[in-house]
Image (tube, rainbow, N blue to C red):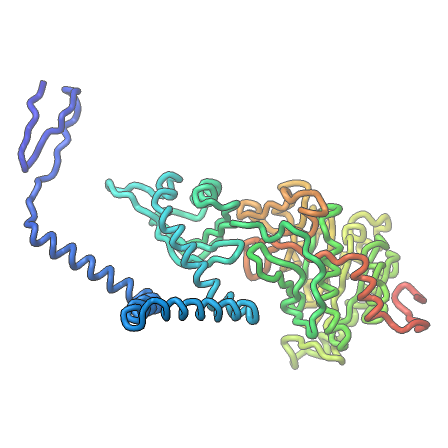
Length: 484
């Protein structure tokens, strides 16, 4: 057996295998105790200084509390604390929005940041997201944590050589490691990403119909709630919207939520809605609204006539605006026109008359390619998103995928890779309580899908809307389908 070499220079570690490669350790140098004490004191001073600089309010408050305790005693200090708590309680009761923005959100984010910082090293190492390089374990850098009552967004700076795909493959490990329901990986700048942890489902309960606002912002219409608890805002001005979902997914509630949010602008004469309802079911329930503030058509021939009339109006407006306006502003003279088509697949694929199908496709293609700049928007809903059914689906910049039947359909609607980025539309429950109205949204400006839920506009809500905004009794209107 080899003799074990000892000493402060080099040493052969004890190994029962006589043929093992020698393992040598580096020389050991004895550092004076005084030098160690000075270095540790400098480190402690630097950490204290950094803590004071990062938390000036907390440090000042703590010092003020200690000084008040020494000068005026603890009863007065306790009374002051009770007074501050009372002020915060009244603030939260009377002004919840400002309290949440200035107090609750920062405190929640700091608390959640501490929770992630405490577990970060262990989860990254056990989840095999901390590579070893030259004998050192390299941890991804934990950045800013932004927390809401439902989700946490954690900024991460990657180790050199890592990619977002490495974290996406370990999304389940990260969710379990940090005690979240779900983890999604969001794209960020080069060398960084955002981990979105869902801690509580904000979309579990049915959302009642939202109240009608006094004014309508056509670039941000409130129609429901997002997964992080914030309002779901749909843009209609300057874009086109495609809605895909199986039977019972909640497409009708989403369409009516959009119409409901536009009612103030419709009443002001700034918006006209043209509704195509080949099923004679969903939009017909509130047809009086469309008869007053636009047009309604259900017969295929009448729908084609209405769409071609919209194309002619769009082209005439474009010729009038040429060289004068590059962006449309809704006015009573040139209102914003929204074309709502329910079950567009019946018109583009299942319509037995081929000539009508071709005319519908041509009209929709013209509206979606030329209508944005002059104030025309197409909102189309369908069940089957296949290319042979809806050949112009790529002409819709903003897309909404409600419950779908197959995983492949998710990428058909939201674009390639959407399901890998967390858009699990095929796993939405098929039930009116838990799945109806739930969807994933992909916007033109953001490729990452966002989970949302539309408010449920009931028959009673539609009747109330029609009673308030319908024409007076006895008024005879003419629409695309004839006398109504």
